[in-house]
Image (cartoon, rainbow, N blue to C red; front, side, top):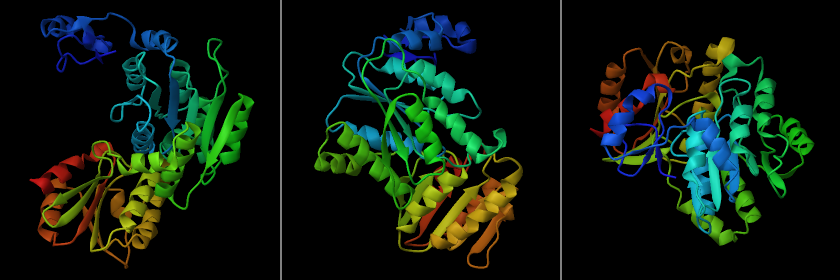
Length: 368
């Protein structure tokens, strides 16, 4: 279905579902040629899901969800008609919208599922009812809202639930043996009769590749089809998006940041040759260990070959090292100007930070 919840972007013929305060924009949507669908979004999507005959992949994890979703879409798209989560719409609004994008021609629906607290994944799973579950990893994202990393694993395991009465066939769980709490997740999956297909890798990028091969083989793709899909992968906006700005390579990963995501980005950066500059904004929602977690990143940066670190925000200002030049900023405009003046031919720049830091503005400034 062609659905919109935003009257500002409604196109003629689109269905408009008013969400939250959206009712006051109904006439605006109709005036633009939209068709009113006056329903509760989540309830409507839950009922609509029962009509779908496609495979449904629910994908969650502490980091790398959007990258894995886009990779799997590219791989499975070599053979199947795919629908997927658009961008990072992985919450109580985005998941229903993702369900409604599928139709009778869809063969595989890939839906990213995010969480901030216990119960979030359970709710999204009740609507989505995935036939295939993917957990990329268990990290420390949103640790502020959990007692421990183990509790994060339990919350992610909410993706496993009793099969709905209207569902047929075996369900499959793809689990990362390289990630903490694999056995906990596997036990939860087995309890609800999921078949388990494990994957692993030397580092996070390799784990993503191995996941693609495991999922691809499961759906009957050849090795060459899987490789072609990986090679054709296009990242979502602000997600490890490699750009050329003159003679400088810019790796734009500014959408969000958590410790596992930073580690992934640094592993990606490691493959490049040249002077490496990292721009890091504060990571949010890490709880009482926030400063310690930020400081622990220094060793990963050194291993990745970072020559200059520029930070934005009061917490990342706690990172220091004698093995690289470290510059701290509280003012983004000052950071932007200094960074642009510093750039030299052949530099590689990685930009990473939580949404609140708006580091996509730094990317735009460099490109201007």
